[in-house]
Image (cartoon, rainbow, N blue to C red; front, side, top):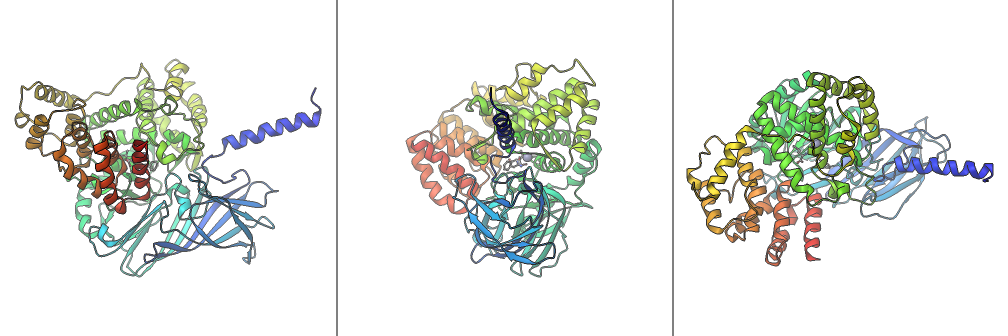
Length: 618
Ligand code: BES
Ligand code: ZN
């Protein structure tokens, strides 16, 4: 029989283990002890040294009365000073210690406080290699005259430019004062004024609590153009007109989403178009989506990106995954809402085509994924780099699951449920179990017999796509598939294919459905008719170049080199890098191209390409 103290001890140990398991394994923060509730930044944006230099003042919400330690996340920050600020406003230097550097997590900044101070102020500078920042020299901008800086904080890169609790479980408001070169404009994921004059000084306020991964900054030769009463595009001057035209439907999208899910709660919704090295398609920084220029193709065919980032204003920015294992709550809901926006503005056919392409992509990707990575409710991502663990599964399988629920309960019922869910958890961070409990109470129990527990389990916890899932179909793709089949059978030469009305999606489908390899004559026939090699459309290039590589079509190599050097968006270029690494000759070519490409790449893209090349060398 265990003695009482022993029993108590083991119960306490269990509780402690549980609290640790529930915490975010990708942060050093001890959120049960203390939480940052507000951040005040005061930074100089020093292009000369590629550094942010200044102070971060953190307001603390102490949860555990006995706690005296504040553990923050940092990566490659030079910490100059730490002060505790008392209730009387007096600052006292305090002891701090930097732990050892973990490759994925970075370095814990451990601050010992004599008492529970209401605030701490940290003096620091970022590294020129900060993983969350890209400092572009003028040559890498469209205008070639001014440097450019932008951040990408998701998933765990905010810690490389601000010392903080870098976990989506914690929310804080922020203000920032920035000093920048006088000819440049600064923007942040906060209140931005398109008419702000260039004075070298910018003040920002974000009065709604946000998680750290939504902290964002950009500085450059940035112009603004209004596209509606609460929307504008920001871009380098030479891009701004084109961007405004491409994104002219943004206000319509906001109105459509509000009709479905309630008011847009963030004030303005602006879009910043970045230089082509931006490593993602888009990033839902509140009030200011950051976007790749590769979606500006002139015919609005890729503006579902805006629908997606806008949708995050509800799914993600209002209701947030509490750690990255539950990212489907962010990206699955967002992809579902994106689809609904596209359907409302551009019609069912457009939405269907996007679903078919998404489902094709995730099925293909799943073939190479471990079973544990094919589920929505992922196990804790201990020891993993969330950038490398990111797949299409949370996006496409997540949206597919929600479409399944929509069909099971009926659109009207399901729409009301989703709206209630966004309201109920607004400005909170939750996990899959919390979602499930809410779902059971507010949907399943009110409408019993529509969805079984086995079905829920299949979506959330089983690998692959459930056998009972209904696949998307798109009428417009039937013609594309028929045209491809006829061409492959040698019945119709490429130039005779009736492709006059095809948009990006049809072209993507046409190329994606090709066999593993084609022969040189076939590739040349396609090139002659459609000019795929050298295409300015990144979505087509993403599929065409790997096909040419697998087929050994050397003629495409100069264009591949240009493509890989000029674009840094990971999703578009990784398939080509990976295809190249499959043969020794391709790998040698890839290594040569990487030598030239990497100076222009963002740290996140460099990391992915390096990993792919290393894997091939082994
Ligand atoms: N929030 C993501 C980007 C992201 C996810 C960055 C995880 C870092 C870690 C953003 O909303 C996104 O999903 N962007 C997509 C575009 C979208 C249309 C699917 C992208 O970048 O391709
Ligand atoms: Zn997203």
